[in-house]
Amino acid sequence: MENLFGTLAEKEFSVEAGKLNIIEQHIAQFGEYWPNEAMLARLRNTLAEGRNISGADASFYLHELKESELMKSGLSYEEAHNRALAEYGVSPYSVYHPEVIDAFPDEFNNNWRNAWGLDR
Image (cartoon, rainbow, N blue to C red; front, side, top):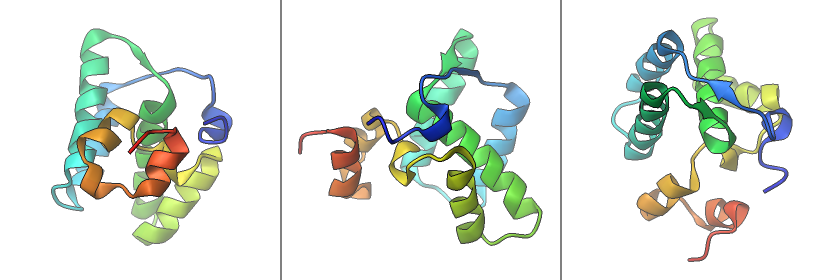
């Protein structure tokens, strides 16, 4: 897991309501996807409880913010997605929390489980 989080490793971030709104609007354009909804719920709960985020929650939060910004500047989803991952040096497997991976096993292949050291 040490390689999952790039420059985000061992750092905490606060969730801001305005930024969460940007993420919600960004994600809405892709249609309903339950793992995204689960990650958004995690962020909403963290905001409501006044806690900081780290790990997969931070990776998802910052990734989606950067991806939104890049797509608004005219990049395609794929290019924005790849650049957002590169921005923080995170693994593509870092953006969903292991609890979300476990909750939606049909949405995540073994690469996700292996990255997190999850048993099948």
